[in-house]
Image 1 (spheres, rainbow, N blue to C red):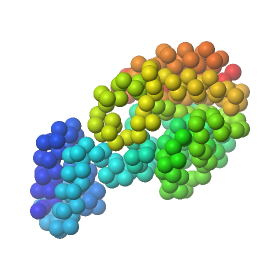
Image 2: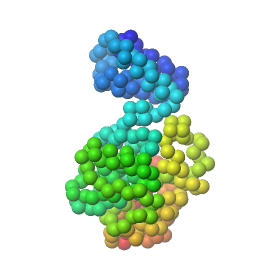
Image 3: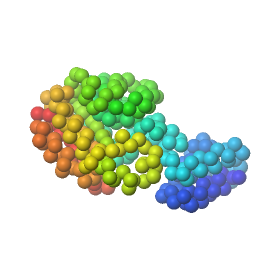
Length: 276
């Protein structure tokens, strides 16, 4: 089959499976298998591909048709201009979360100590370390499997951070200049409504915020001040309808300059505040 014929095969199979971005995913998987770029379809569409490439492409298209996330097939995802390893033990880094990193960077100074609660793949903490000078970071997660992914990502990026398996602050010591967190914030009853790619393939413990989705915000905010220096900043990713609730939690526990930041779609995405 030619490069274009393989692409058209992939598109047809993914459209049959009701994959929303069938054309994009078919192209990305073809580039992944053939080690090509986005220009190949236009410039080399008539080139013949070998049987091994054809076999592997049809196999990965079959996986994607089963609603396995594209990123779990390729094993990576781009975030903040960096490439991160991902697998079934971590949430897939999303563009919305870049808003959190961008907001944190506005207040990030050289030499700061950063605490990343519910670190997952480590993409938030490692992005902040990559784009700053002489900052130190500690990533916390209850999942040892997730922390292994974070360690690998740090090694790939040539960065150093401390990774600690802990149930929130259980094993945390010391004090920090900044706390960032993208905690589980989906209400339990809403998980069944998520896309199959998320519901069936991403770790439930990284999604489930319990009854109202606010459990982890309550737990983290109630204890955060014990681990933050005066003037320290906190940044939380939130669900689109959680801005007021999380803001009120911060205010209740004495944080100042509390503000909700919207994402590119105009939805509430980040809540930030400062320890007085």
